[in-house]
Image 1 (cartoon, rainbow, N blue to C red):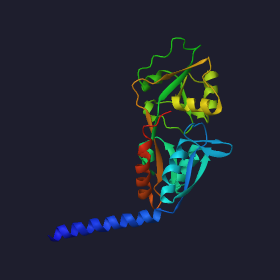
Image 2: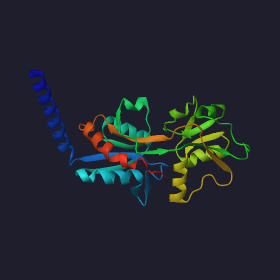
Image 3: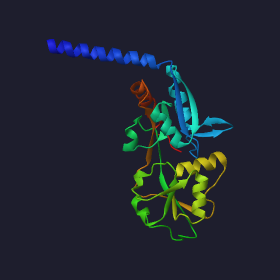
Image 4: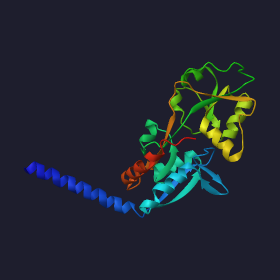
Length: 245
């Protein structure tokens, strides 16, 4: 009986403490960051305003708890560095890696993109022989600086480009055989800005037998109420998982 009473008291104490912390999170202000380059339709700047799917999700979830936030667009490396140090409490649109998990709490995933690759039709008229991501190892592959391509299982990716524009330029200049992209991002750039990077000269193919890349938000482990913020976002972001572009 004594041990059962002690157990009940502990549950009551933990529940009360959690409610207190949740109350402290309510009414707070967050500094949020995102990547400023080529991540349409998820995050982008138009007419000097941050727009996109990420902002829509935060505007749906946070105000209900009287939480305000500022949204800063920066380089992805600066966003990660600032969230790790605690200057930002939250970073949006991040893929999972064990290394990042040391410094951040991952929310549940809330959207997914399709791993794809682009090549010049004139160079590979019959296409590439790709059955899985690692098959791209037979070609010179380029990607964007700071992006996580670990799911592809490639040993070498040239990541000197800092934007989709630079990445496509590298392909057209034959600095790469193939570039790694996400179908939804190219569609977003075309839909929002009217820029068709493929045109008539480039072809895009989905990577066979490869799962979609799931994207999460990153909560800074330096934030005092990190666990409460993660729980709030987890509950709110689930509804977006079926959304596709």
